[in-house]
Amino acid sequence: MAKSQYPMAGGHRTPSVIPEERGDRRRRLGSGVVATVVVLAAFAVLQTLMALRVVNLYWQQVATLAGIMVISALGLNLVYGYTGQFSLGHAAFYGIGAYASALITRTLGGSVWTLLVGILAGTLLAGVVALAIGLPILRLRSDYLGIATLGFGIIMKVLFDNSDKVIPVLGGSAGMCGIPRLTTFMWVFVLATIAVVVLRNLVFSSVGRALVSVREDELAAEAVGVNTTKYKTMGFVVGCMYAGVAGALYAHLYAYLNPANFDFLKSIDVLLIVVLGGLGSISGTVVAAVAWTFLLEGLRVVLPAAVQDWRMVIYPLMLIVFMLVRPDGVFQGTEFGFLKPRLPGVK
Image (cartoon, rainbow, N blue to C red; front, top):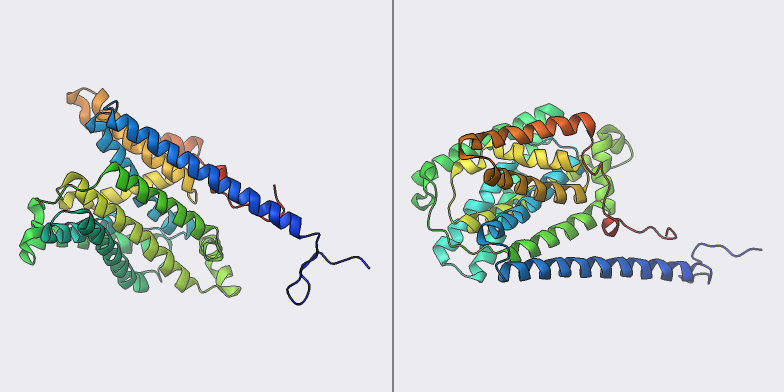
């Protein structure tokens, strides 16, 4: 009788399976090492260029902002791209993270430790608020959910405008000043890398498959035993926590917060990035967020002052063109090789 290729009772495995598993482990380890080397090399090159002033302070700030947009857009990609929940309130959670962290560092003083506390507080507060509003509104679907999140975003904008009546230091509609300038490119690069790794491991896990099943067909997912309410809430909360991290970094990059930076149009900006990169693609979101940030700033430099406002027309036109020629986004749901999981026995 031929030996079975499956594990035998008692935990013993046949010799024919072990070499394949070892090969898979080596390939996964090799991919991880290559990805780590590439990331460290990219960081070393960028840091060196910045230290030597080959990249001036203005473009350093743009690169830092691009990293912040990467974190924020990855969060919305989890909410909309992987779970299929159409949200227009992402900027509100971005603002919650920004104001919470800024209030802490302004109160406790500016240091690395207070920045960490501020980021943690902003992230947790964004998650708690997302959980509080997510439980009732995530029962809605499609456009109705988008309208509900839009309403939440408008409410938060009004609260930001009038925040000085409760906590004067928040500044209200005049904006919040005196925030310690603590965000550096290194902080953003490290947190953006962690954000990519966490999201990659989440979406390629059993939880990620459940999230995608909700996006593909919620009724079918429920029929096979997926707790759709649980996974929709989980995806929404984690995605909003990403926005909280990004908001905390943003607050300490410009040292000034204005409620206008967190209105619903800012949610549209992030939505554009996710759609252009491709729904359900981490690689596409990262590339689109960086390209979008540098495009806007590049147009600011290239265009004459008299037509600066036209740059806000150019990129929506690009969006229309993209939707006509590549409606699934640049990456169309695919990933860079080092972000893909390696299945056992598949080379």
